[in-house]
Image (cartoon, rainbow, N blue to C red; front, top):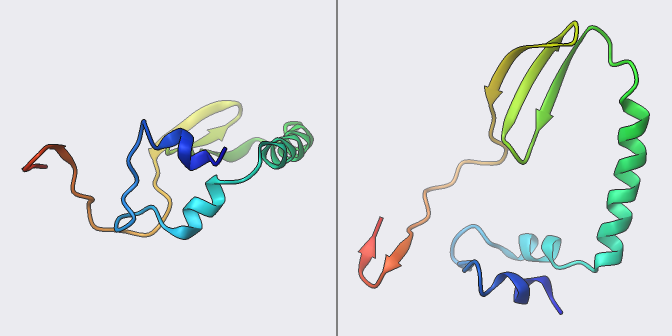
Length: 99
């Protein structure tokens, strides 16, 4: 079953808005391929979690946060966004009701 069929009842994607062919293609991949991606990234993550040094930057993409760490302590915390600017998408809660 395509991933779009699973999300459709919960979330409505507007073709005229941000959900484009590229996004659909990225979401609509077989589960075994996605599992392979996770396995590869787990290996990569394990190889980098050793000594990162006294100072490093940690990005949490899903939470849209970036932190700087010095001597094992979070020194600064920042909100972050990734992507290009786009105009806001109109939301329709009820017929004729725009936000």
